[in-house]
Length: 356
Image 1 (cartoon, rainbow, N blue to C red):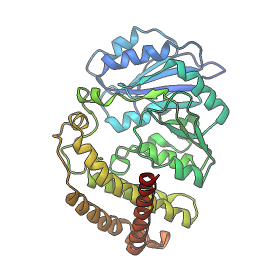
Image 2: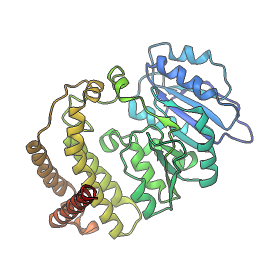
Image 3: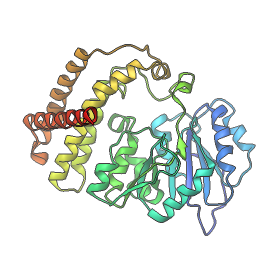
Image 4: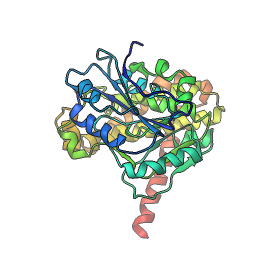
């Protein structure tokens, strides 16, 4: 990897606790205020790491004006793609933990000390942030192994606020292994978190310290990383199928019991089925999201969703189960039975809420 190191803080005997890592490309109008907002916090427990992906605006010049020793700016020199940038930025800092922010995100400096205390106290291997919950909502931690895998890994959340123990990312060679777009697609962090959940605790941080751009603003901030004109865009049925299959293939490589692997694969099937139908319907029906991804909004009918669901079932079983049946002991019958059981539970929950 060829990186130009433009400026850096001095590495002392006591490294920072948290690197706030921001990959960027041609968004200095939102990036620079975000960097200044982070650096408005006092103390040396935090640092900001920016990895520029060959911007052609004045991003680097504007960052050079800041002059804070807690700022690290590095440049790829040329645009090496979104995936390369968002993965590699996480291992460029010197802090014990790295958290991902996008160059159009926001954060609340008043809430960062609580997040730092959470990292010191819980010492998770990895986790992600949830948005929209009230201040004071406690974090959730899950012990290494099955509990962390089921709760944290392969969650497909928005990438803002994903956090990792930095040395653990280097240990699993994340920057080398998870930049193959054909395999990880738009979800490289899910693969990383699955492996780190076997090394230590996984966590979900629920206070609103970090947040992505609001939905209405996404209309004017177009996506750099998704070509929605392609039929396998990540939110399309084909994209969701590919993600579910590749997640499942990765599960087969984990050193876990076969029964757990089977359950995790069933979970990925159910997740992909839901995202390729109800999730796809939501995306296509949301004007702000569609404008962000350069496509026209439209309505996806229920009959079309049923056809997608049946297609998803057939393709998932063909691409994965027949290939790995020995490892998971799965079959189409098992998939169908699991699907019906989940539907029954969902209907029961809905009825209980209606009758309550």
